[in-house]
Length: 268
Ligand code: ZN
Ligand code: FE
Image (cartoon, rainbow, N blue to C red; front, side, top):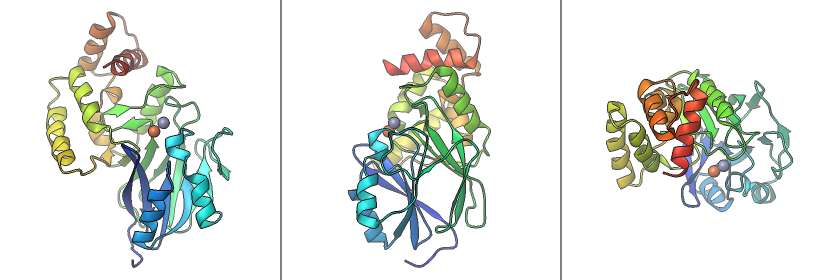
């Protein structure tokens, strides 16, 4: 491939419903959360790309399981990831407000700490720059299209604060989630907000995409603010649904609302 002026992001499907995102300039590439190495190696070979860096959002095996094999096959390249000793091969620990500068492909990310799904979960945000015309967010399992990650380690308050960091990003930010959970998330979101017109039309678009096996991702921050119940815990309809399902009339904060609908989703 020839070197591109604009960076491109491609999904590498893995396991049942994971996407390993590959960001490249036509020559060099980085991947995010390589849970498996074989599909990454195949993709690099097919596209004629050289892997120069790995970004990790959290320690779960479906996001980290391919790291060591990639390093064995391709030599030592930097592996960025959060604190904790459960990320094999990580070379660089990154924290809130750290900058990750990659030389090729040429891109600079800011790191957000977004506890909730796991305690040390991080996300990588690239604002507009020479070769990036729309901001890019790699959010791991924190935010999904029309949903959010399960609270395995963190609290509803932490997840609420993490999602608020994303809500403050530019609305045109392209959000690259690591699972294709969109249709089942939409079914739940419609149970929360059956009259949300944006959600109803998104449901039709998403079903059409999946019928053709096309990814529903990336989504955008602007879209999620309109259709994602976990980012709408301050909206009257979502609050009412949370009150009904929890039997609690008093849900004094968005974190209480999120706790109620997250618990509902877990048994939905
Ligand atoms: Zn996970
Ligand atoms: Fe995952």
